Amino acid sequence: MFLEATSPVRNANVQTFERPLLSNRCSFCIRNIFPAATIPLSPSIGIDKIAIEIPLAAGMGDPKMFLSTLKNTLVGRWATKATTTHQESGARLVWQFLKSRWSIRLEFNPSRFVDPDGTSLVTPAQTLHVIEELIREFMFESDDALPCFVITKANDIDIENWLPDWMSMVRISRLDTAVDFVIDNPRFDVANYRKIVPKYAKATNITYNRKGVAETWTGVYSN
Image (cartoon, rainbow, N blue to C red; front, side):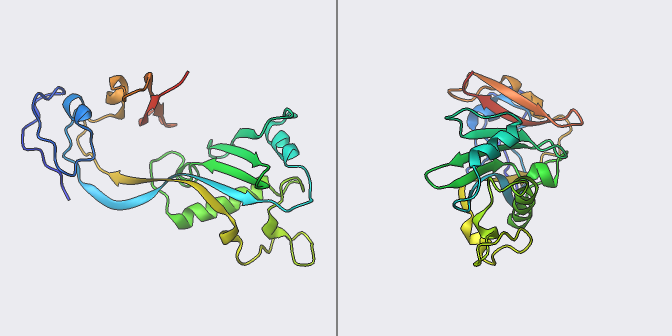
């Protein structure tokens, strides 16, 4: 499907433009960013960011020590979070201990694991695989944050054979989705958005991938 402009684009500052009914670009961007929104949309929808809650086994270990291990330093009395970087992919992982729910909250971008140097969207099946691998890599080094689904009915620890319904025990607390669209004009660059500041934002930030290509434009809302 194509979203076609009714007025030609002569330069980066378009004076008049009739916004398409289904345009995925805000009118402010249409007036200021080249090219205008004549964008072929694909049906590909994927997961952009996810946060899950992993229930912990009761009476085993100290989840605060788990956070200390992640940070490689003893966390403070009231600390509940630890941020780490996955060594192989460079992905940012945010861990949080929820005492009231006796669970670990993990927030991350699954595409950073599936396609670290690209912009591919991630399917739910791929995200599930990433979740399983992160649990195995980070949560099985000690008894401080063992998921409840690795505890057998005999109260033994079995990190190889999880309970069959373990997926239903993991609660999703955040789910951001994204859709792919294609801009094939060679003059387009995400860096063009550098001076376009979203409403209420104090500044903008351009994120570059390992190849030095601008791939993400975000607003900065706090210092």
